[in-house]
Amino acid sequence: TPDVASLGALAQYLSDVGVRTAEVQQLFEAALAAPRGPAWHRAFAQYAGCFAVWCEAAGQPQQARSLYEQAFEAYPQCPYALGNYPQLLLLENRPLDDVEAAFENALHVHPALVSVLLKYAAFLRHKRKSIDRAEDVLLRALEVAPHQADVLSTLAVFLHATRPNDPRIEDLYARA
Image (tube, rainbow, N blue to C red; front, side, top):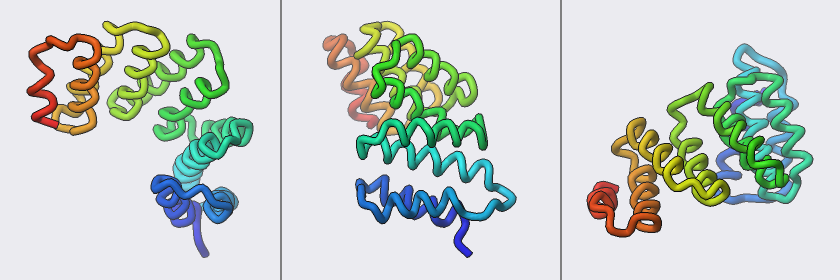
């Protein structure tokens, strides 16, 4: 009998490669309806969060909100759901303070989530117009993952756009 993890992993893979068909939606729905096993809470929250991201991309924000709520009910510390929830708040045009609080909550629970640090830095730069705070968050991401190409390149692009004469830019691009 397929379980939440096997069905969810397949649905997440298809979603990650950009598939937006009814079959993927059915896989997510089957995963979330699968019988509960020993690791059900974590797996359910992971795939409910992933399905929520898929629903956001498919233009279904109300479905996404419901899925995030289910994910947080099943496993409130789910890194995937916590890390992507602020994007839904942005999509819903929620107050920027709410969005920032969601980012800070995710990073309070999981301070080393590089993907969230990068999204938070982009939020600070583009929505809050806070270059210095965005740079601080990117430097924090660099401390967490000093050899990760997306961190190095994101910081290089940021510096190139905000401080074009910064001597670190070329080194960051080269290391990325």
